[in-house]
Length: 439
Image 1 (cartoon, rainbow, N blue to C red):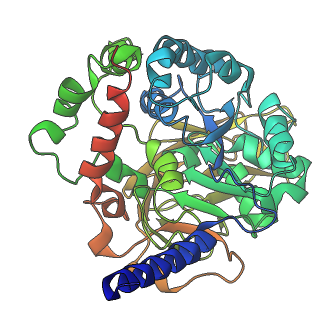
Image 2: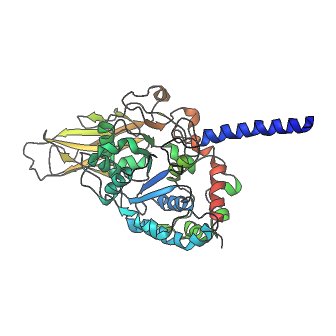
Image 3: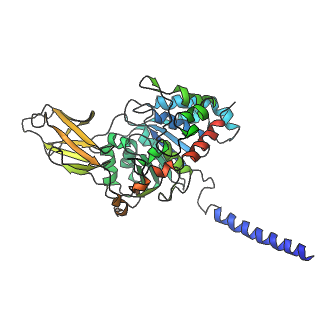
């Protein structure tokens, strides 16, 4: 063998060794499914209080070949029902032939219809759980499947069905990975959230109260990257899904085409980066270990000097009069949001609230009980201080939330810059997916 041939043979053996080592490193360990696609259930209030869930459903279905989608659950709050999910699936059905030219792993529309179920239609009571729903039962059924992969539950609306599933079968806790688009959605589900924090502190959960806003706030919005210009230049005309996104979504009687997609960071998080390492950072954000999650309790009418940490659940407990009948009612209205009161065994009214932003809140109480009827006033909510990021609670070892470091904020939205910094990348990738729908 010539010297050059000997060198070439030596290089080939060395490269073969490197390839063997790399192959061994990426090969799935024993007992892990060779298909590494994440298992995903989406719980959404599509058709409810905001139009962005419908946009995010378009985003989800364009990436349906990259995940094992196991369920679409219609959850509160508001008038959203499974019909609204199925409407988007019907649009997707028109693009399936074009999409399958790029990937045979896109599911057919009928299989998506079979996995679409109705969850809770109303917020739970103060216990944080109520009656089993088709949605909560579906989560339990999927979590019990003999599959070594965790089940990612992406919560875009109320968290009632997740709470109900864990109440019905606490053993599934270790199988779940929850990404909760919190903030406004926590406002609809304060008792369910409190149930999870109280009874399931070991749950693996990302609580994105404001980080998700980086999908549509901040980042590069110059030229074609603006929330309006991107839809016009890179979404419209891309198959049935693109036209539906650009022209077919209506809310409040008006057409909504401005890019928001506020729930899409949950899916992007699962697909990009290192999902089991929330601090690492990805298109879905970077997070810090959560501090104390216990609710705050006020046992007197809120006053102007009272300050509540933004996104923290508060329970307001006010004594009822002894003359008030059991069938009495009380509602605390906080800046137009109705918080129904419940009478506890302690003969007191209990009101639950969670502020979705930092501001002064005005409230009034209307009740058949004269002890509380007519009470009114204000209180204030303030963002979590930056030092919270250094106060992880040992009670919640797998609970993650927005980074309160000011350098990670987009305006008032803590953590949002950990998403917005990727804006051109995730929108460019979304546009390429939409191009698959072209005839």
